[in-house]
Length: 153
Image (cartoon, rainbow, N blue to C red; front, side):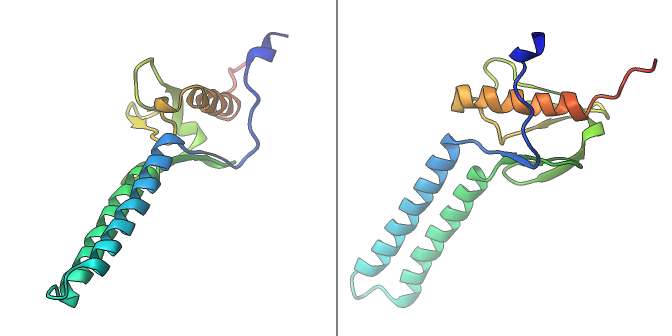
C-alpha cells in the first residue's frame, strides 16, 4: 500500500487558481473602481464631464492591472496543460513537461520543459499554504500518470 501516500489523480479537466491573490486583487479592484466612481460623483461643480470620465477611466485601468495580477491559473486537460500567467498563456502537451517542482521559499512552481527551458506556473502560489502543496501534488500526480513515457522492456 505504498501508493496510499500518493495524492489522488484529479479528474480532467482540472483547474488550479491561487486563492489569496484573487481575493486581494479582485477586492482591491472593486474598491478602486468604487472610489473613483464616488469621486467622480462628488466632485465640485466646476469639474467638467471630461474630468469625471477621466477619473472613472483611471479606475478602470487600475481594475485591468489588478485583473492581470489575479488571473493566473493552471488548466490540465486530456491533451496537455495550459499555464495562464499575468501576461502570457502557454499551451503545453504532456510530453513537453519533464518535471514540476516548487522548492521551499519559491513563490510558485517551475515547470521544466523537454527543450531545457523552464516556465513559471503562477496559478499555484506558495502563499496559499497547504492548498498550494495539495494543488502541486495533484499536478505532479497527473504528470506522473500522463507525461512519463514507459521504459522499454
